[in-house]
Image 1: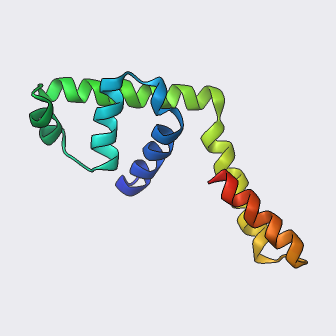
Image 2 (image 1 turned 30 degrees about the vertical axis):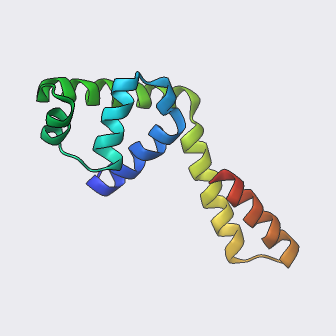
Length: 108
């Protein structure tokens, strides 16, 4: 997985399941994935070791993946959004198009 894809993937998981992480894990993952801070930058800001940051990143990402593997909420939303995008390419009437837009808006 490329860096940008990895960042998008974890940002989606964080947005959906972030509240299930410890506050430290969430803060470190947000700093790393949302703000693109390096492990060293996060360690310096928090006055902790790089190893502690790496540990929080590892445990936090593992927990997010574990939850997603059980719940599949993010995966299902992505699949629905892909189906809606295909449907919007060839709408048969404007009412369906408006309804699809509303569904898409709610899912995002």
